[in-house]
Length: 360
Image 1 (cartoon, rainbow, N blue to C red):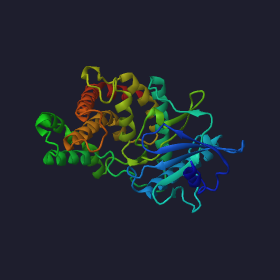
Image 2: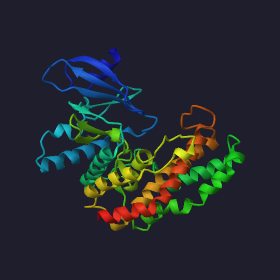
Image 3: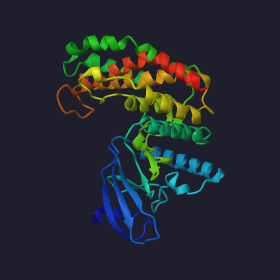
Image 4: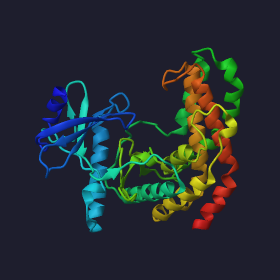
């Protein structure tokens, strides 16, 4: 704890500390709650940034500063109250930056949001609220003046993910191609269609927006009454297609089973979750979405399980070098489960299109 107290001392706003509590939530960054002695002062969240995942911390923190500043400005213009609970506020270090580098690790602090909670349960009710809030999040950032960078380059670039698969197949590092050749061939059949967003972007027909790129129920703060306060975990907020926020949420939320479900009969696409999320998202995002973006939202729902299947399969062929596994064929099982979800979403596409048309 002495080391953590020393880190905290580099953020002058934080006065006397009473306790530092490790938080278990969050898979990427080490996170602590910093409680202060002054009853009138706020508490804080201290995070050690995962420098292996986010290799350019300057770009990462600049993106977050631009995003939170712009949202705060929008809230002030709308005469909102209780703004510090509706947008994250990061604390400056001694040198004026929004992070401190201790020679080995990068640290940042933001104000703790009191009387708040995160939810993990995915229900039609929570999915509607998440869709509404993420659509609002994108809408508020649609006119952000700064050009943001990619915190993880090519994160949701399908062409890049297909190239990674081709490279893995050519190298066959773990000698697994004989087992998966038929599956690779099956996945390849749809590769051209699934890469259409990148082509449309190059043709000037599809824009990139500022998106969150990690849309989950747990990446949102709710008050004690279940009302949404703000979006959190802004590390992946960067330019992307709106498909990133729409499709990635439904990849996990509308799956009737686990991401690594070995019994493929259990993997279905939950239309009720889709309808709730789509309703909320379109209500708040239709003000800036183009007709093509709206038309392609069902494509986004297919894209993300397909992309994840490609990523799991690539890692399996490479010998499990990226994702942590619990058993030898874990990435293979994950691939089959995600590919089945892709097929289920594909079957539901006409119903998705009809429902979106009914909302407009």
